[in-house]
Image: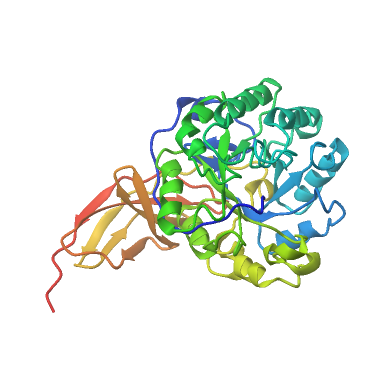
Length: 424
């Protein structure tokens, strides 16, 4: 997190062709499939959690249990590489991974010293971050089910001349050549906010540099994203291209702009994108409004913590524990829902039905070209979609989820035209 950056709002869309290597490569552990993050079981993995400052508070290990109890399924951990902040060595990193696993959390480890390189003279280079990860290879290899490697936090400051593309692709290739099979996460330049759209406009080049296809993009939503249209445009540009993205940092307020946390969380929930709030506790006094709990006490949530944890679309809304902690063997994704059909149409509603599947829940989406919009989640095999316009052509599809959260392929499309609304 860089206190020089700020936030966001809402809305979106989805889908477009995925690279062949992402579908054909053999995978163990967390990986990218068809623009989504999934586990080795094939189950969708929507990461929801918080940032916890182990780099500054290495002895606050009770935080992991508090974070889990708050409803998180993951935690993002800033680590020091010994350039700007103290070095997090192999023993410490192994302890952190053990704490994540003991508390049933997916662990995102981030090399933090790179924050704002090019504008912050104290910042490390991305190449130095790569050397840090190479020094941790023996600790990390074998943890692909539980750990994501966030190569470099907010690796450049603002501007269009920062060599983010070349250095990011070099970093990915170096780590893959060294035997890292983990999902790699890459942060945007511009203090994590991509103010010049360098990451947005070059994301496909970076993805294609990864021979495994297992790279996810990380945007930090602070002051640059101060309206709903900006958030919608940015995130939709990734989901429309089937490029995996999550929101690695955001907050409820900030001295440089007013993040729209309601919109960020609503968008993430509607589109099943991951998000991580900044941060659990321990921010400097002038930034204490960023703390989710007071003095690391899980029983004392702040106003920001109450909003983030139990407010609309918060951690307690729809966060699913990773299946690696529930079912080591896993199962293959189910077939798409069958016999989806339109059973009733009015000027403002359309009712759909489909063949039941045992122990399943269903998600109904509207489909408009490459874009999808979720309109209903239900455990029933029929749903009425409300608030439609008269004299309009609608196309729908259905997904199912099993008890472990694995999402099926999309059903066949069905279409209907609503009749004109009656005057008066």
